[in-house]
Length: 613
Ligand code: G6P
Image 1 (tube, rainbow, N blue to C red):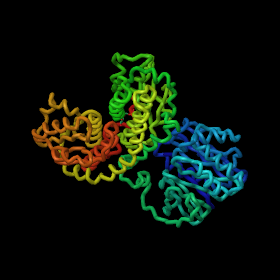
Image 2: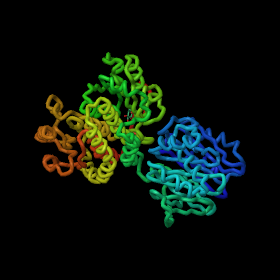
Image 3: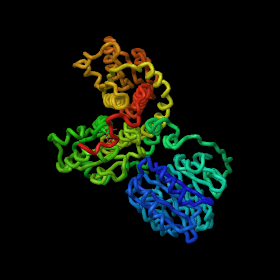
Image 4: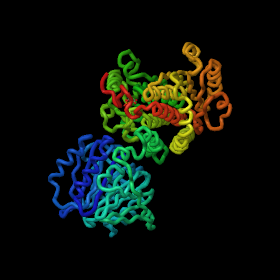
């Protein structure tokens, strides 16, 4: 989720790179850096000043050498390693003659780093990226040119990447390669540009070539050569982009929310990457709590706000089922002001996309005062909560611009379920085969999410039929209950419609009085151990005239038969189903808001991060 820009040609590469970095800044990166090939060799500057990093770089660039025709730049969204200048890209090899930028995650970086150090390399950062610079260095030492050296180095690399590198000895060349993470080349008469995102190129050109997975590009002024990572030549297919800057920032989507909903498979896949050692042990990066203290925990207390609270509620079901540890979930602003029962054997888990929500920060401080160990699940590396915690598990959803949480919410559930499985492993409450099977199921989620995303047209049709309704109830049971709460919250925040989330069995104790013809009931009714009871709850509201929408597992005709509208989803292990079932409800809220003409990225009265009580 980092930003890459590169330029080689007759113009001032530094100016082009800085301009490109500034265009990428809207995502709120934590650091930035640039490397140029000059007559004296590689010149590099880096800055870790949050969103002002690029402005800082511009100041630092005043001391750059005058001739600078080839350069690469990077804006970083930290995943491995803190957001410091030392971890900012570009990274150099031991000779200082090679500079490299990277977007993605090098999954086997730990073993590669150990082997490189054993062979005498000095690694200076905490990043997963730096190993690639040193792998290329070894190939260059062996006599290869930069392009072939990158191709050879990548044979050892596992994971997702888009990479760009320059070397002092080939001063007009940028080499780049991609697998999973995006990369586009920009073509001009006398210069060739490279970027992770089209907005970075728009000030200079609209002629672009998108690289495919496992391709390697060699950029020289006015020229582009593409080969596969195996060395086969690939035809260069150029297209012209007609987006304006705002459209390009959204990558062609009408708003950030749709873009972020579509990024969910990626967010989940990245959050799952790199979490299992070869012996099957779950390794949760930056969990600085000892296995012993995790094993000794006799209670889990999860605290959060908003959508993060709903992710926490899902986690309670998983933790209690898989570990048999009593698990409490509380809203941070409530937790702070009551007398929660927790002590040094409690594992307190704070869940926060931003890591800056003041109520959750204070709740974690409160938990620490009670002696609890504090684990934080956050999307922002080195956020305030992450810095204060005993351990952190990062969701790797990338920056989320839309105010309503989408991709970070599903990534939180995945991260929390990994914590649950880790606890189960340590406590021996699940046999290893079952843990492996569940991890295998988690790995299927990105594919299932893709299939669910393909069904947005069907949700749009249902939204069209519901347009004009004012009152909504969302019902669910078991893990379907937090899904219902999150569905109702999305509808409230985006469409300004009255929407209540309720446990299906509880409706008859009061709220059923509100059901009348015209009320819409959205039932999360995917297959689980309470499916039959859910059907009875649907019957109760149907007989009182409600319009019934069900989220149903593919092929479940019995559930579909009781509904006016069906939102089909692929079936998955019930404890993982909230990750899939969230998607049609996100689409529903989104479409109803758009039909009403509302701004889905900036709903009224709401803030992305709430830093006041
Ligand atoms: C705000 C946002 C929500 C988010 C909540 C908690 O209300 O609009 O989308 O769920 O804060 O934020 P956090 O960063 O702590 O997850």
